[in-house]
Amino acid sequence: MESISRAEAKEHGRRMADQPKALTRPVVVLSGWRSASVVSKMLASRLQTLTGAGEADIVPYWFTKANTFDEAAQGLIERVDDAWPSDDDTTVEVDAVGFSMGGLVVEHAATWNKRQLRVKRLFTVVTPHRGASLAKWIALDPAAKNMKPGSEFLEELESLASEAIEERVCYGRLRDWWVGATNTAPHGHDPIWVPTPWWTLGHMRASGDPRIVVDIAKRLRGEDPVLRVTGPAPTN
Image (tube, rainbow, N blue to C red; front, side, top):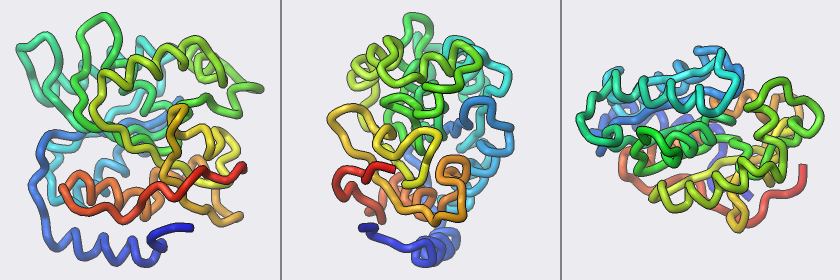
């Protein structure tokens, strides 16, 4: 069912940390809806360790106070411009890692009709590409309402993002009651999914899952991944 265990992933991580490798392009790491800054900071720090990149090469971004996707996307573009200035009509080309809503923010920033985020590769971790199960019952702001399954926003974003972003790698975890593992990849695609023990939080702890983090780092390093799509994710 999975191509690597948590223990094996941690061992990969130890070896990778001892053998730094230069990145092809800078990386921005996003938190999720109303997430504290610690989520993106910790994930960015872990990826720095696994690649050998410095703080100037992998930067975190969080949007705790953003009520709309426009606000979050605008802040993201400003963060990228501040870290890596560009005189072009778009930002510098980046790879992006988005936890939960963060993945959708990257797609929105890469496709909207203002200054755009230029994205080569996007790695999404438990992102509600097909909508969040929780948003059907709780939607406290416009951003959350846009994450309801079948929303017009998600349908339009899915078609635009497939053209704007060259490569998208989507990760899901079972027992993710907030989003649902089957919702963590665009329609017509299956996520790279991993099982989750019953005692952990399938959604909230995904950004620290060593299997997912090591696989992202492997891909950033230009090395063979340790996780792959193994078929449709089981229904949670």
